[in-house]
Each structure stands twice: as structure tokens, then as C-alpha cells.
Image (cartoon, rainbow, N blue to C red; front, side):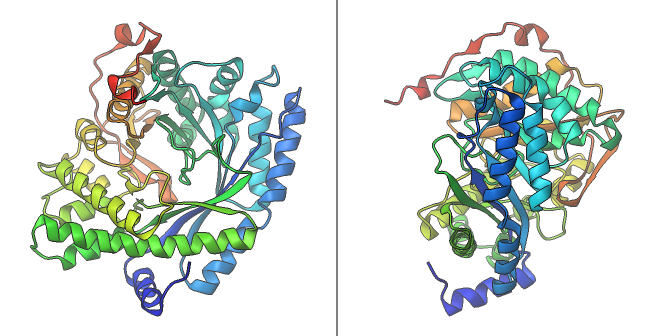
Amino acid sequence: MSLSAKEIAETIRMVEFENLDIRTITLGISLRDCTAPTVRGCAEKVYTKITKVAQNLVSVAAEIQKEYGIPIINKRVSVTPVALLADSFEESPQPVAEAMDKAAEEIGIDFIGGYSALVAKGTTDGDLRLIESIPEVLASTRRVCSSVDLASTRAGINMDIVARMGEVVVETAQNTADSDGIGCAKLVVFANMPSDNPFMAGAVHGVEETESVINVGVSGPGVVLEAVKSAGSGDFGTLSEVIKRAAYKITRAGEFIGRRAAEKLGVEFGILDLSLAPTPLVGDSVAGILEAMGVEMTGGAGTTAALAMLNDAVKKGGAMASSYVGGLSGAFIPVSEDAGMIEAVYRGSLSLSKLEAMTAVCSVGLDMIAIPGDTPPPVIAGIIADEIAIGVINNKTTAVRIIPAPGKKPGDWVEFGGLLGRAPVLEINTRNPQAFINRGGRIPAPLQGLRN
């Protein structure tokens, strides 16, 4: 594909004045040929393959950014879920994570995703070994991200793993207590996890994917915000059209950059994830868009309806622009990464309950939310179960990335820096659901899952 002169001029304007950027170029790499009878043998194969296939990723991104003037913020790699490799040996897969981290440092990328397990219906020994190792791995590595897909509309909810992940989240936070529990910012729990998501912490290279592929995450909250402002007091039909046109332009620019990267790297182009991924920068906020639409403050009455319309219009605009829109694609609502969300929480307008309601209509789920450090594991498991149920029943992706900040109480602040931002610690309902969580087993798939 190519861009017209008009599209190039519009893209330059969006970059200069509306914070348009390519949030991430993520190179997916299959590790299915890296199995070995020992963990050390597997780790060596993993390191060798990642450094070979991704050796030019950062330099290619720099070339494209210089050539076209569109900022490329993150360069990342995703790999085959490591638990699939861990079935071939009897030790903890932690050395594989260390090899991933070493490879990521060698090639100069920001994060590497795929220290993951797919356990919606049940677990293997490799799955369990990986899950048990997550707290130590996320404390001892810098760039490795982990995810666990524990539910789907077709399989139901694996409540045994929900219970264990409540404990894993707490252990991970405690292991990184000196940095406000930042290990939990690299850990996400999913329902209906997509296999082509380029965004961390949930990026994996799905087992059905090709040998290597480029997936691009483009972000344009600032572009959509300016479009909404330009619509004035027009009705919702008019507003939807304005948002769709903005999303169309963002998608065209993002796919063009993704295809150029794939061409230069000699790999396939996969998908363009059109997710409105905010940053702590002023003017780059999904909350700001909702408020420009007329909501007094995010979290107030009308917020969920506004977010639903925004998400729908973004998806429609993206689908008009490309046949390869994938990943998550919509609007993210990470609290610590969105200046408007941070302000809404600080002012008491946005609660955990309202955030949960909003996740029924947006792209992901409860994301980058700081809660008190003394929150018991069963309460965290209950929060996970509630959010995952929304995804399972509605046949959509939902996720939880929550940080029980060690030593912090409601009203305190956590500081992560960079794109991860900062956030006030939310007060939560601490009624203990342990008796419910302890039932164990699997919540059966809903009737919606019987679609054949």
C-alpha cells in the first residue's frame, strides 16, 4: 500500500500537533523449534533464535522513523507461549526467561512478551511450572513480560488458576516492593487472549502464527481528541462519523509503516492494532476524549455510554481503512498511563466499580490499577474472576493488570515512570470471597460458547 500526498500531509500534521505515534512495532517469533530435553538446552536455542531473527529490528525502526518522520516509541518482540516449551523438560523454565531477557538486551528492544501459559480449560506440568516461576522471573528480569490466559467463551473460567493468580500477583508485588510492585506491571491475566496483540504485557506469538511476523500498535488519542473538539455540539451520528474518519487516517498511516518494516525485515506483515493507547502526556488521554464528548469528568454519569460509542466508531473507522485490523483495537483505559484517568481517580470521580463497568464496552479491562498493598490474594482473585466473567459472557477480550502496591494505602501514590506513569492507590471493597474462590474447578462455558 502507499499513501497519497494528501494523506502524507495529514499524517505530518497529526504527528506535529496531535501526538500521533506508532506506539509499538512488535516482531513475533515462533519458538516451536526450540524444544529440548533440558531447560538449559532450550534456553540456548531461544537466545540464538531471538538474536538472529530480531537483530535488525531496532535499526529498521530507526530508518523508518527518519525516513517518514513518524515517531516509533517502542520496539518489542513476542514469542510462542513459553509454557508450551516447558512441557519438554522437568525443571523450572526460569532460565528460558533469563535467555529472553539477555536476548532483548542484546538487540536493544524495550520489552519481550510470551512468558505465558494458555490454561483456559486445564493445565499441563509445563503450565504449572511456568506459573509458579512468574514472581521470581519478573523480579529478576528487566524486559520480560508474562501473561496467563485462563478463560474463554468456549471453555469457561479456570477457577483453580484464578485462585493461584491472586497469590502470584501478591508474590510478584512483594518481590518488587522496592519499586512499588512494578513487577505486576509486566503481568496480565486474560480471558479470550488474542494471539496477535502487539501491546505489552500481553503480547504472545500465537501457535497458529507464521514463523515470524510484524504486528503494529498505532496510537492516536490526541488525533481523535482534536476531531471530537472540531465536531462541536453536533449530534451523535455526526460525532461518530468524525471519530471514524480520524481512526481511518490513523489506521492508514500505521499499516503503511508496518508494511515497510515487514518489507525491510523480510518477514510477513500481520495486523494493525488500532488501540487508543494513552500516555501520561497532556492531550494524549482517552479520558480527555470522553470529557470532550460532554461527560463532566470520567467516571461520572454517561461515561460508559461515551466509551461504548468511542470504541465502536474507532473499530468501524479502522475496518474501513484496512483488512488486517487485529489484536485488540479500540480504546484502552489504563489508569496510571492516562493523565485524565489519573485526575479522575484523584478527584474521586472514578472508582474500581466504574472501571469494571467501563471494561464491558472497551478493548481490554482493569489495567494498571494500584490497590492497597495489604489486599489479600482471595480478594485479588475475586477481582480477576469478576473481570474475566465480563469477557467470557460477552465473547470479548478482557484482562486484569493490577498492582497491590507494597506498603501503600488508599490515597498514596505509586510512581513507575515513563509510559507506565503514576497513579493514586484506589480504595477497594475488601469483603473476602475466599469461600467462593475455594470451590475450585472450572466455571462452565456459557451458552454463548455453543456457536457451531
